[in-house]
Image (cartoon, rainbow, N blue to C red; front, side):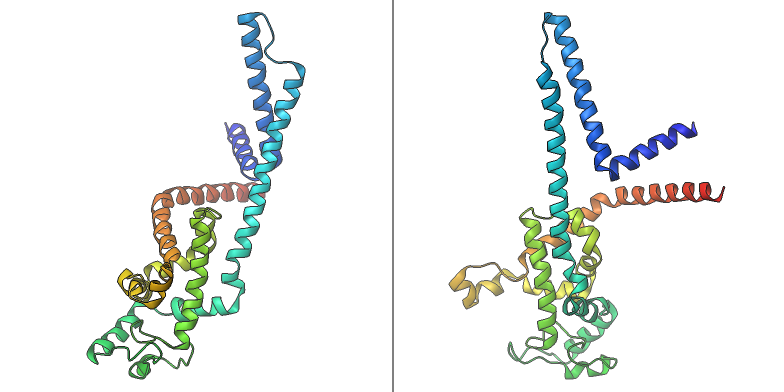
Length: 272
């Protein structure tokens, strides 16, 4: 019947969005369980299992635990906001993503890679980038927004901007690996950015090259510190993000369809 369906949907909405409603339900369920245990015990042993103090203190404990859970959620949300919002509000990070990743499509990278192979370009050193052979493909872009090839742009302002953006996401990855933020929180806030890092050819190339263990082990930095190579936590984050998307794509689609149905019913109700 329609009223039963509406009651279920309203209760489901309150359960997801109302902390007060969830707390009341948990306290009521606790009381019901306590009364059930009390009744069973009295029938079996003719003595009460709980006194009046337990009937008061246990629900209060349940309510306190619910409040602690709520506090943890609020604190986690604040940390996620402070950590992730920089990707949107920090102009250096947001512009670096747009200039060097978002607008650098696979077709453009293939063109640069073809020129690099035809001219047999190799890096001169770690401080002299090569851009002149790619000038015909820049479409008016100037430093520090130029299209680049990961093999020969070392020492450029584009490399510094890109490393700054990736380094910040590496910090997000560190927080994820330490259990301070969850993948669902990351996926719903910066999933758009991570998708480009995972899919774009230029980023696959750059992250794959920087992940070679032999390259880092042979440097004096590893010899003296034995530290992790660049973007270690970012690569873990990207792997976990892809797995999360594969596991939860169907549930996300069901959620979107459910919200669409709710919206249509509300719209029809308002039209009436």
